Image 1 (cartoon, rainbow, N blue to C red):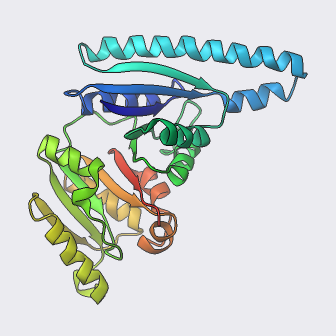
Image 2 (image 1 turned 60 degrees about the vertical axis):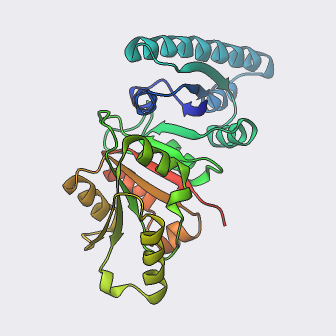
Image 3 (image 1 turned 90 degrees about the vertical axis):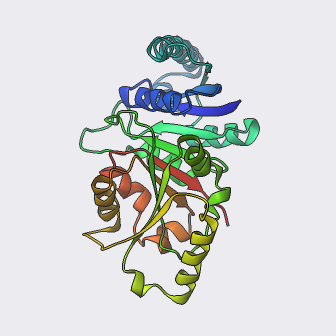
Length: 282
């Protein structure tokens, strides 16, 4: 059974993420854990009261979280109909990023799914600070970021953005290949830049990608940079009707070398399609 972790602040955006992943894997049984961290509320409220009262406040926050969680599970079951998924709610006063990594390490989750912004997010900001923080700190598990505005569609076209400075054996990256096999998806490898300007090492990595993906329906694209990298990716997604964008996130290479700009953050400010971020450690 696939284990999915869905952090929530009980906002509409968080619900959109829960709904999307429930539909994405509707043909297999999922064990979905809904995680609510009320650490920020604890910090704010307990700083104003004495220790004795702060314990009561934490108990009330636990109680409210559990009740909201039960209502959320009831709603998703009504909206989804008869699906083989199971749901449970976990509440914690600990900070979200730390809790997510601890749960991944201890319980072996296959995927973490988040909305692009939370309940208090400003309308003009498409990716909230919490989502960006989790993106940059998550370890050992892919992260699927789901925009609130997205309607679920089968991911028939999946883009993978690369600068070819690194070769990743996509055929062994389960988060992508599982979807490709499940939906018979077409892969689109996207490079922002001219193919003729690739260095010999990049050319070699391009050939390795071609060999690795020879059994899959794959297209390779070289797109001129328009403004910045993230805007260029966004334009490509829209023009080619891409259903899902995938990125490999490497703290050192991805931010500083892959695009030389904080693409994970900036793509979120343009994206209107789900983004699958796969952390790679070196």
